[in-house]
Length: 184
Image (cartoon, rainbow, N blue to C red; front, side, top):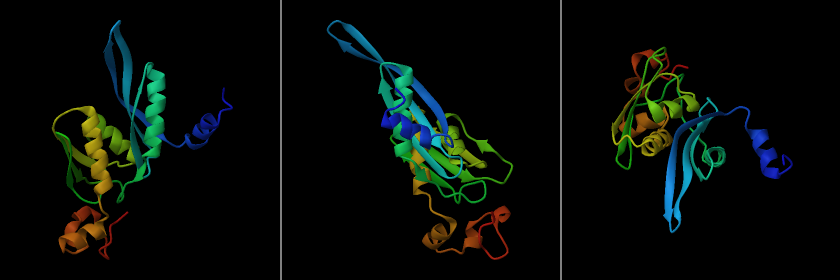
């Protein structure tokens, strides 16, 4: 049944995306005759070049749940500001009881992150970053805190205006260029 419009659309838009399954959970619904089991899947999708999205999918079978989560993640893809291989500035992001701290890192540091934070960073194309997950370790809330933190991130010039500082003072020494603009 590859002739359906949705199948064709998914094949056309998919080859350049990095899809990562972060969490698979078995859920159950208690009914009169016993329990009905299903699966909940958390997926992160990105193009490794500044676009990332997250999605949740629920179904009776794991492949169907992954497909639903992937479709949802592709619909929620947003752009993330990246300077060189890292993020423009440090931030704390909170979602529910989960809190995530993100800090820019020098080139060559790598992604210092665990679990869902690592998946979001790598799918977004961020190669050098320091992170710490604080509070609840619920994978869904950690991934959402990371995602919303990246969405709220401003580029270096906007953040410098907000803090009433020159861009040179905001950026670390390894990212400064001669003219004060971020080095790529």
